[in-house]
Amino acid sequence: METEWLEFLSDWFPSNPLFGLLVTWLIYWLIQQLYLRQQAAPWLHPVLWSIVLIIILLSVVKIDYEVYWSGGQILHFFLGPATVALAWPLYQHLNTIRKLWLPVLVSVSSGVLVGATSVIYLAQLLGASELTQLSLAPKSVTTPVAIAVTEQLGGLTALTAGFVIITGVVGAMFGAMIFKALGIVDQRVKGIAMGVSAHGVGTARAWQIDHTMGAFSGLAMALSAFLVAFILPPWLGILGIL
Image (cartoon, rainbow, N blue to C red; front, side, top):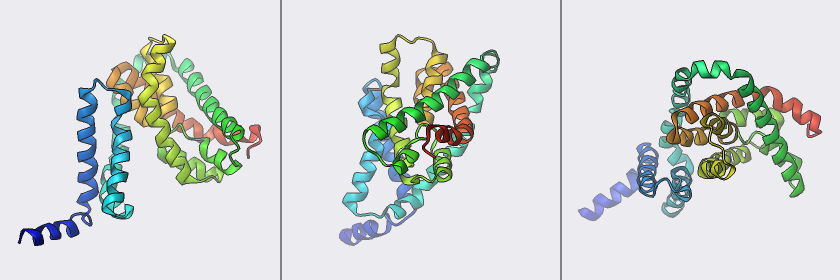
């Protein structure tokens, strides 16, 4: 009887939409607890290890990604509301942001252009094709915007999505260490840098470090997403990529 029950669970549970939801939540929660116990050690970033462990689990249990995604997309749905919720810390710092709108706009615009230019020339140096270069150009903005821009440019959206995730995780893991090494102490400057370079994942980390840093990171992330759709295509034309 016990064997039949276990066989029923092994057949039913992975195919149930709740599987993707529960597995994602449980793995992330366990890694998050370990991450906090280790004083937010960069090498233990929850997003990175959650991705790795979920991939391993799906491979070992032989569950198709589509089956997992039927439940995992429930969490994906809440990315939209979570992003909109960043408006609250922005509102709390509205007076400061109004005073700094020009430096913020110039900084974010420069960050978008420098980020795209540097990755394109680095890709050229390493022998990447033009298609790969176009796919890497919008790597520093949030995934939905990056994918839309890549489609407009004629790149590979799957490649873009992968590098957007890598960019965000790396920025969240090492951003604070880089700021410390460079002697940067202004939380507003840190936030702008994190938001421009590491989008949502970096903004989440910035919010954990300091509320002001998180607010300016959210602002930079939103501005980057807005600006990249307008200034990146003509800028790539100037560089001769399009």
